[in-house]
Image 1 (cartoon, rainbow, N blue to C red):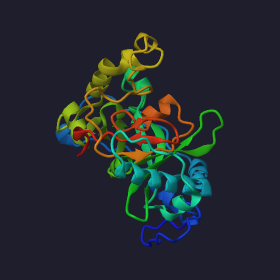
Image 2 (cartoon, one colour):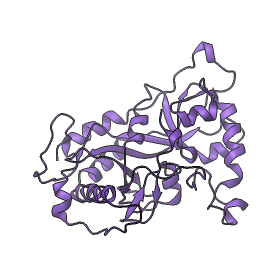
Image 3 (cartoon, one colour):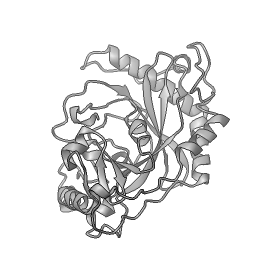
Image 4 (tube, rainbow, N blue to C red):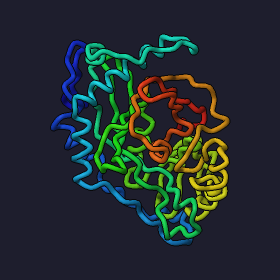
Length: 313
């Protein structure tokens, strides 16, 4: 299927892979190296410039493109949109049948909209550390691609590299486009998420600037220094990272950046979706912004995205 930023397929068109050759160019554009800009003089702070996170190689982009362009991905995203429509018609207590035929999936005519976007997430090593110069604030988590159905429903497709096989694969599909929308707001700055509170930030030199209400509530409207931000996340998460006494005790599974759980004050869901997650480790789910963003009920069944009132910009 063509990456239809301009064209649109009818509901009767048979999907034949999300993206094809044109997606390769789109992924390349969306994953340009994110430079760290110098801070504005009005908000400049003393301190070392933070380390830049690793970028995504051309080989990685090519491998991710192949995963997105496969018929399996098309079928999977189409099935997702079928379950999303079923969920929206169902009552809160209804149990949905996860089975979706290929014809039902094809009728959704899923297509990609725009280039893939790299998503960066709060780095557990940054949370543990005391030196802002030693570890990047955020680390690459996954590629986010916006998908749209024939009826106009939207979703985000997560493409990750399996830690064991090193193969790129479509790991999850979730409703909405927050990950893509915020990822495109960088304008040269590194954009990253603190998934535990559904916050999105831009790293401008050695300043952490808020991009949505959750972030403004955390660091203020004018942002904060990288050092102050590290103190904040260290105090909040360092004793809850994987391997900590907190996690071993079984309390919420730990809520640090590599083992996040939905925030206790997250409101009830106002929008829901079908999920087709597979092969995601706990660390990848957290990095992908699941905490405060989506509650996975079961692979291949239904997931509910929690729309936190504080998550919108």
